[in-house]
Structure formats: C-alpha cells, structure tokens
Image (cartoon, rainbow, N blue to C red; front, top):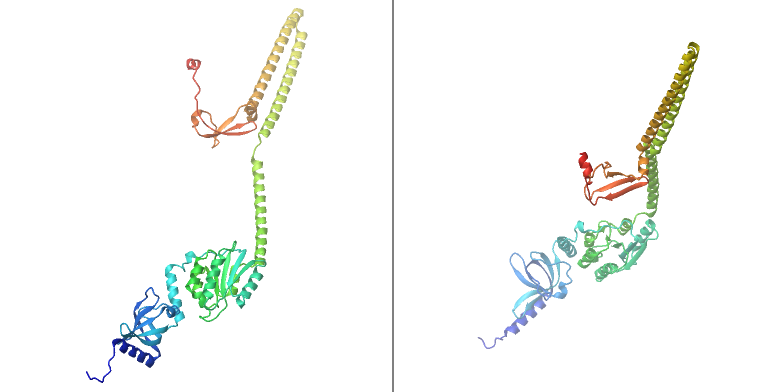
Length: 454
C-alpha cells in the first residue's frame, strides 16, 4: 500500500458516501412498483421500489405516512417525492420519501376506492341494515356549517313544507383537517338528544378535496353506528361520498334532503280531511245498510206474544161458535118439542093425553139431561183446548219454573246421555238465559215400583 494514500474507516467512508449522495441528488422524484411492503408497530413504512431491471430500498416515516390518504399496497405503481440517503449501520443506500402519489389515478380517488371496498366488505353498505325514515318527524337535527348556503336552503324548505317543525342545528366545520373529527363527534352527540327523529348531514358542493371530510372512515363509521336515521346530503347531484353509502338515505342536494325529510303539511291536512269525509260517508252507508238489514230480519222474526195473541183470538172465536151452536141446538129442540106437543094435544084422547103428558115430562127431563151433558162436554172440551193452548205456549211453560236446556249448538237436551262432564250448556228461563258447565252426571235411580211395572 502506498504510504501517501489516505485511509478511511468504514464509518468515515459510509458518512462521506452519504454526504456525497445527499448533496448530489437533493430532493428527487422517483417512479416504480412497490414490493416487500412492511408495516411494523412503529408506524413507519418499509418497502422496495423497483422497475424491470433494478430496485432500491425506501422508507416513509410515521409522520409523513399518516398524511398519505390511501394505503400503499404491493404491486402499486407510485411516484415518490423524497431524497437519497445511506443507512449507515448496513452501508446501504435508500430513498427517504416525503410523500407518495399513485400513478394513473389521484391519491384521494384511490383512497376513496380503497375505503369503499373495505367498508362494503364489512357490510356497512348493506341495504337490509338501513333504518326507515320517520314518516312524520317531530324534531330534526342538522349537522352542517352554520355560515354556508346549505343551512339556509334546508331551513327554507323545511319551514315551507312543515311550519313549526322543531329543528336542532349542530354547527361543525365541513372542510379542513379537523372537520371529520367535528362531524363524527356531532353525530355521536346528537344520539343523546331525546325525541330526535332524524338527522340531516350536509354541505354544499365543491371539489373532492373540499368534500373529503365526508370520505373519512371515522365519519362513515359514526353514520353507520347512529341509532337515529341519517340523510346524507353532501354536494351536488353528481357528487358521491363514502357517507352517502353508509347513510340510511342519500339526497342529491341539501334542499332535496329537506324535501325527503318531511311531507307538505298543508297537503297532508287536505288529504286527511278528504279521507275523513270519505270515511264518514262509508260509515254512514254501512250504518244505513245494517239498519235496513235489521229491519228485514225484524220483519221475518215471529214474536211469541203475537202467537199467543193469535191463539187467544182463535180461542175466543171457537168459544163464540160453541155458544152459538148450543143456542141454535136449544132453539131447535124447543121448536121440536113444541111441535110434538101440539101434535099430541091435537090427536090423542084423555088417557093418551095424560100418558103423553107423562112421556113429555120424561122427554123434557132427558132432554134437559142431554142438553146439560152436551153443555158439560162442550165446556170440558173447551177447557181442554184452552189448557192445551196454554201448555203449548213456551212462555207459559217457562213461567211455571221450567227451563229449556240446550247444548252450544242449540240442540235440545232430552237425556243425560247427550251430555259429557265439562260440557258447556245453556238453560232458557222465563226472563233470561243461563250458561253453565256440567260438573257431574247422575242417572235417575230405578225404584222397585218402576221395576215391577217393567
């Protein structure tokens, strides 16, 4: 070794190389494909950046990694902004990246697509989990900027459609680094308000950067976790955010969200009045039809009192006819007797006359007995008919303390053989009906007299 050549220690040489590389290249932009990506607990990102022929180690420290909106993945084509440096303990050079951009698509769009796929796999977009909106909300919460045009548009629509609606405004920043934290906290905070029926989360239109707070994962999860239904109304009709997919309903604009939240009160009142009038008319028609039907049935029903009254009239008629018949028969027999007496008086001598007079007295007596017997028979027959009519009257039988027993199918019970223990029966009395349950059945004891008769 030549004595005038300067020697370096390994550390000195490594540091000189590091200084030369850092001074020579400074800030650089490198493109390549990510491979061997590692995410240790420290939060730093380690990987190789390669192309078809070469590769170089790269690192993104935790502070810069947290600012990248999308997740780095193996095989992803990226553009790194950073500097070249040497890792002294190993003597290897590497790129220390300050930021990363995906090639072919913007970083925010990539972050949007990645989070959408992630949350969709977890089921946060499942339509079956969407909560139905209340049809007639009494209190609505609005999470938005208090100074933007969106809040004025929503208030104008809500007050026009449903005057007097109770509205709770929770003001937040809808743009900037802290906006996603404020929005998520506002959603959680409104869960504690009593009788809050609906939440509208919204802001006006803007670029993807302006709307980015509504694409943050913490906002999406807060919307999904809400127990109160949420309408997402972010941007214009063509703008879509992650919270649009996790919300229970997406509205194209804040004004449209207000229209979806409540019906038009005046139209509802008019519709209610129309339905009330229609219901009253239907009820009136039903009542008239029922009364008419009851009238027809009433005409067809026979009243037992009417039957008794008809039978009473029939009995009076029969009595009058019997009395008239007896009177006619008496008159006829009297006329016959008178005629015979005249014939006897005109044709017989004294003895015959006396004999005929005796016979006439006997005839008179027998005739009187016959007439009395006939009258007695007629009266007895009349009494039997009256008794039969009274015995056939259902009310007469019930008035004597009897009851008519039937089963629940209206079949008359004649014998205990028709019944079973526990069976429900009905007993019809003079002034009402008794429903009872058979507890026991006891056959009638057979007496010795009945056995002798048998």
